Length: 108
Length: 296
Image 1 (cartoon, rainbow over the protein chains, first blue to last red):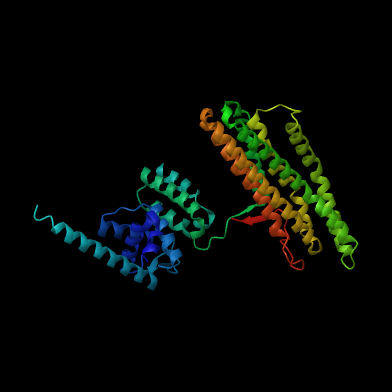
Image 2 (cartoon, helix red, strand yellow; image 1 turned 45 degrees about the horizontal axis):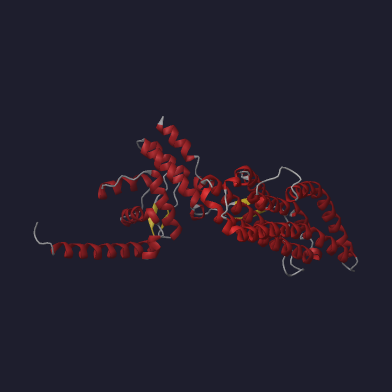
């Protein structure tokens, strides 16, 4: 999974944000941008968002939902959920290690 | 204004991407504020989509016609003639390196000459194969039909190939525009891929017939040897440059390096195209479209 995530290149962080956004339920591009801005403070532009969506769809981590509207919604797949769980576990390990090591500095 | 620019940038994306995501992104651009940052992001996205075109869901492989690659590559190669062949006066060799430089010069010119000879040998091999197949029952009639097509193709390419060969021989024997020593060593690198490109239609025409596929494959092998000799000759040119590089300009080195890459690439592509179109098994029908598209 780690290797697969590295293959996402500069889209790794954006892909994680998209997976977190879609973990809540299916969304189209506009709602994803608003949601991501709301929960992470990151303002995504369309070129970056769709670069990440293209890679996530290629890996089978997300899939489009059939819709008659111009705004096509996407949903996370089982593979995408597993990938998200692994990435979040990695982030937790990083956070715990960081917190433990920074405690060694003592109070500021 | 920025929204119109963003719309124009969207048209720069690959067609497969536009078919898949174009409408959604256009809708997003219409619904959100568009700033210079948005336009720059879309432009980077377009470059990324072209670079990673295979990742676009449903994208078919990009197919470029072989002839277009060869014509564009040959044109680019000849654009480098002046900066690569006219500049070598700036190279200077220490007397201690005279014998090595002489050996490398002879290696380069000999390999280029042999490569040109091998390139011209391939239509000759095909002529022999056509003649032999024409006498062989029950394939004689089919072989003669393809043989006529091969002959017509050979006649059509004979004039330009003869012209290129004459120009090359003119440089080899200093009959036209004498060039400096290093220039003389590398002129073959410009003529060999052009000659190979010009003779390419002949084996490709022959490979259309299973009866002549063996002859086409033999011609492909000769072209492969020509491509290898061309590569070896460019290595010798690189050795020559290494000896006299101290006083050469970066532009000259870049021009020669680009020429070497283009020359070896074009020669390899020609050999590969013939070998691919003439399978080992004579019963297997090869690609029916000579000079057709190739998958990149």
